[in-house]
Structure formats: structure tokens, C-alpha cells
Image (cartoon, rainbow, N blue to C red; front, side, top):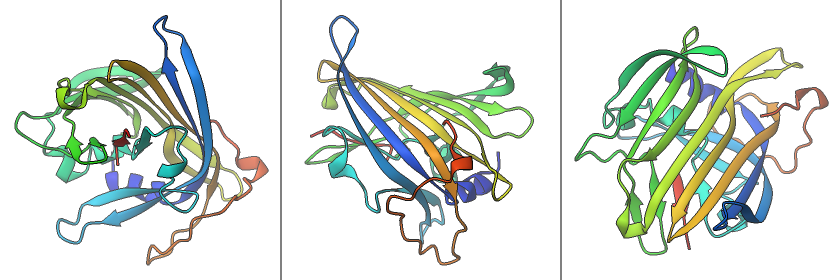
Length: 247
């Protein structure tokens, strides 16, 4: 997959992000569903020292952290499958091809990647009121056999994080083509992402879904104002810091 091309696609769209947060009760049934919608967009930034690219999410023109459905805010999630291929992150992972499989009926190469022992990737961070903790990961990627675009990514904790009382952090993200009829353009973009958490002895389910995609051209100086309540074009409606901030 051409990571540079994928990053360019990420900076060419805005969408409506629907977030759902729910606790899972002792019986396994979801409880206390809370939801929130945002105007969502992504900026691509480059570190001046190592030249690595980073995705910076904006919700309603800002970070949106104070407006999440609960104090458990998930950011940087839907770009995780793209960040994995950035050199600074990729060098800390041990990739192994498991062969040709499929994802939703499409031929796909399956890649397994545990984080290397003694290496810090910073792909997944948990931030509390007093500190930020790097969380080592392992996971799998499903990469389209014909185009090498990322179709699906799943990650889990490489080891339980006793210091955070975090025993499960399962992430599942879907990507795919989004058609923009007015501009006759197709971009490969995130569709949805889910997290299943076991934290402090409680179980949580977090879901992010994107819809109402709209496209715009990126200015060369990357100075783009975030939209405020942009109405989606009727013919462009389509279905669909990895940081956690428990407070």
C-alpha cells in the first residue's frame, strides 16, 4: 500500500462522526448507551525532525475531547491502520505474512504484527490526569490483494497493563472506497471503528461510524478551517492519539 497516497486521501474529506459508548453489564447485555455526533476532519502534519507524517483529528473545529459521550475519550482511532505503515511506527513491529485469505469476500493478504520486545512504538497511548502510558500492541491486517489498500485491522494488547488495570483493549477498524459523484472521485477512507475494553473490572464498548462524506481540495500550506455544521450533499451520503483519556 502506498502510505503517502493514503495520507493524501485522509486530508481530502470531511464527514459526520457518530460515536456510541456503552457499558456491558454482568449479563453481557449493553447498558447506559450514550451517543454524540461531530463534524469530523483530518489534518496531515509532518514532524520537522524525523519527517514522519502524523494524522491530527479535528472535531467541530477542535479536539472535541470535552464533548465525548463520557470521560473515556478515544482519539486517533480510525487512522491506526495507516499509521502502522509509517517508518517510525513500523520499525517497532515484527510483520509476518500469513498468506492469502479474504475479507468480506475479497482476496486479501493477511499480516500479523506483534510489537517487538523492548521497543516502544507509541501507536497506542493511554493518557490519564497525571501521565501518559505507551501500550504495546499485537494485531492483524487484511490488505487488498489487487490494490494493497488496507481493508481491515484488528489490534489487541500484547500484554495486560496492570498499572492501568487494563486487561482488554481490542480494536477493529474497517476501510473501503467512498465515491464522490459530483467530483467523479473515489477515495479509500475509514468507514467505522470499534473498541472493546476491560478497564478497572468493567466492560465497555465504543463505536465510531463515519457518514455524510464530503470532499474538498487541500491548500498547499495546510491551513484549512474546520467546517461548522456543513450540510452533506445529497448524492454523497454513504455508509460507512490512538489515545484513551480515562478520567
